[in-house]
Length: 137
Image (cartoon, rainbow, N blue to C red; front, side, top):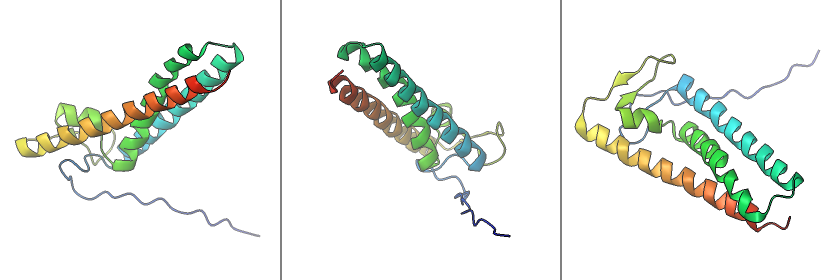
């Protein structure tokens, strides 16, 4: 009988790092799933728009699900939740087990990272939608 060697995914579950890491494995997995769902929705929407022959300007709507997918995947990649940062929270335990970030400097660092992740995901969504709009229909 042959056995499959499935690579194991390891997570950095170290301590909270202001502006760098505010979520653990359970929250990372949740964001990864949301990111994949957002990208899948963008692909389905784009395909639908091409099938119905939507004009190029209408294809810009793909920016929204693409941005949602991008923010989910970026949060998973960076082990950092934008929403938690805005609310002054962190979570390295099970889903829903959040803790307050009480240090003001740490919260400011989290807010800076949240702004960068948000801007990056918006840029990805807009760039993808513009490329889609420029494709011949």
